Amino acid sequence: MKKGKVTITITIGLVFLILTAVMFVQFKTINQTDITSLENMREDELRTEISSFKQKIEDLNKEITDTDSKIAEYQKAIDSNKEASELLSQELEQQNNILGKNDVKGNGIIVTLTDTNDQKITPEDLRELLNQLKEAGAEAISINGQRIVYDSYIVDISGTFISVNGKRIVSPYEVKAIGNSTYLESGLSKKQYGYIDTKLEEGKDVKLVRKDNITIEKYTGDLNFEYAT
Amino acid sequence: MLLTMAICIQINTIDAATKTVGTTLKDNSGLRDELLSVQGNYENLYKELNEKKQILEQTRKMAAQNNDNDTKNDSSIKDNQKILGLTDVTGQGIIIKLDENREVDSNEVVNISGYLVHEEDLLYIVNELFNSGADAISINGQRIVSNTSILCDGNIVRINGKMVGVPIEIKAIGYPERMDPALSRPGGYLQLMADEGVKVTVERSQSITIPKYEGVYSYDYLSRGDT
Image: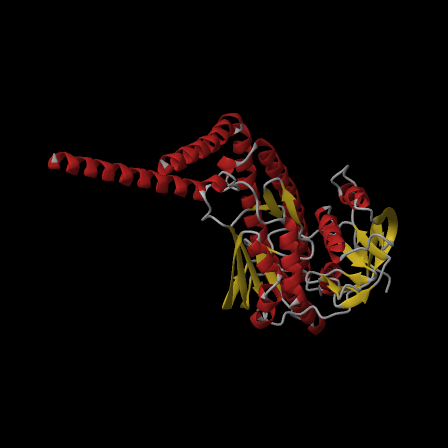
C-alpha cells in the first residue's frame, strides 16, 4: 500500500514536471515569434517589401551614377591641373538646399488648414501631414514660412498657439511642399483612409492645390550638433 | 485541470500560428525567394555606393587642396554630411525601450500580433526628443532624417521604408537631464503608454552610437531659390 502511494506520487510529480517543461517551451516559442522575420510575412507584406526594395535599388543606382560622375569630374580637374571650385560650390549648394540653409524653389503642392469654430487644427494634424508628405517624397516643406528641417518639432503652447521650430504660428496654416506634385497629391488623397478624407471627415477645414514654382524660405535657426560627434 | 487548460489554449495558439506560417511557406515561396534576391541586390549596391563615396571624398579633397576657398568648401561639405545623418555619430543621451508586455495570461498571448506601438506614438516621441534638444535619433537602427516617414502598414511599422517590429529601441543623443524628464515625467507620454500596457524602460548613457542614414536624398524637383 505504501509502495503504491510512492509510485503514484512520483508519477504525478513526473507528469507535472513534463507539463511544466512543455509549457516553458511553448511560452518560449510564442515569445520568439518575430513578425518582421521572413517566415512570418504574409503575401501582401512580402509584395510591399519587394517593391520597397526595388524602389531603393533604383535610388541607389541613381546615386551610384551621380557619385561616379562627380569622381570623374574631380579627377579631370586634378589631371588637367585646374581648380574644381565650381564643382565644390555646386555640391555644397545641393547639400545646403536639402538641409534648409538656402531658400529653395520648385513645383509641388500647398495644403491649407484653417481653424473653424468647431474644429481647431492641432499639432498632431500638422505632424501627421508632414509625415505623409515625406512618405510621398517631399524634398522641402515649410509651415507658415518655417522651413521643416531634420530636427524640427511642432508643439502646442498652453492650448492657444502652435509652435514650429520654437516660433509661434497661427491659423490659417499654409503647408508648402516641393516635390513631384502628382505623388504628393495622390499620397494625401487616397480614398477614405487618406489624409485629406480623414481630416474632412473629422470636420476639419483642409484644402490642397498644386502649384508651380513654390518658394520655401531657408531655416533661420542653428543647424549644428551640440552633443553628437 | 488548470494546467491542462492552459496547455490546450497554448497548443491551439501555436497550431494557429504554424498554420499561417505553414500556408505562407507553401504559397509564398516564390515571393520569398524574390525578396531574398532583391535584398541581396540592394546590399551589394549599398556596399558599392559606400566604396564610391569614399573614393569621392578622397578625390574631392585632392582637387580642393590648392585653393583656400575650395579647401573651406570641402570641409563644409564634410560638416554638412554629419548634419544630413550620413555619418555614424556618438555622444551622451538616452535609450528608450518599448516592448509588448510578455508576462500576460495565456488568453492574451493569443493576441501576439496585436501591435501596441503605433506610428503616432513614435512620431510623438521623436517630436518630443527634438523639442528637448536631441541632436540625433534612431529607431531600431533607422536614423531619423529630414525626409524620414514613420508609417503603420498593417501589423508593421515602416521607418525609412524599412520594417520595424517590437521590441522598439529609440536612441537619442543629446542632454539626458533634459530629454529624459520631458518624456518620463509623471503624466508624461511614456507613462501613458505604460498605463496602456506597453513595457517601457528609459536608460541614460554616457556613450551612445547612432548609425548613419542608409537611404538616399533626392532633389529632382528642388533648386536654389532666387537670392
